[in-house]
Image (cartoon, rainbow, N blue to C red; front, side):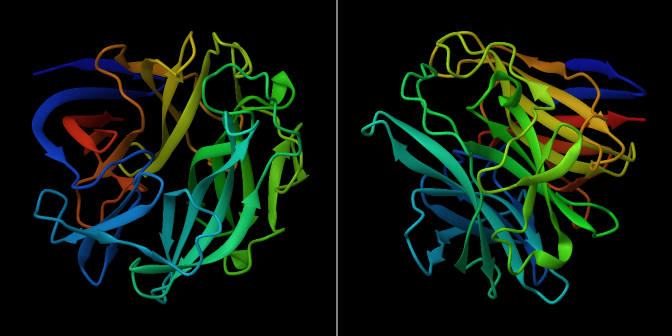
Length: 325
């Protein structure tokens, strides 16, 4: 049964109902997926992370807590991972810092590393943070600025890791979806090695530098009627040879109500201006926070999918998503 058919540039995307799949934990963010010694593994977070492991996505997954070497940067939400060839697992987290006498927070992005497949992590430090002071007059209901709600992907040549994230404060031109990158070689020692995309160049430091939003907020996050895309979830799709980005759109009152889920395409993750205009695939009512794709082919993850994948919304999937070249 056809639920939605959305043309986007040379691609078509179809949503069709499927038997429900529900991840065992709570997904209060993007939930990264990887394979460890042949086992399917997903990390979910709600202020602290858990990981679940089993034979396959549709199989029985056993959840357990993730151990951290320090809890200095909690609460934290692990939103992206990358398994190295030697078995080292790199991960990146969203951390919310109290601001404005506890009324709001400002998110920042940090890095982790694991030598045991995600059972425990060592904190490598904060790698992306805003340069502006918290805006205590911000009226979006959650944030006084900051960088968060993101995906990290490495390019095909393994030159750079790209961070696509939400920028929630600063000048209006910096609010919306922003991008930064880090050299692949710096993955084990990332602090001070991430560079933000600003006015066409990768020259602003990840800690305190300026950004240019590639999908700017239509109404800034400081206002109660904020209208902006957020929570980008990206993967490489083998069926269409494109990067795919899913986005939530918040509009147009406090509390981030979901106006819809949108999709965009780009053949080159290193070209921040190469994304097609976002098109809606789910409308208000069906849409929820944290849309993401998980591939169904052997080795499929939230970073890699093919022609038919599962669409998850906040840890639950009731849809297949089909990509037509």
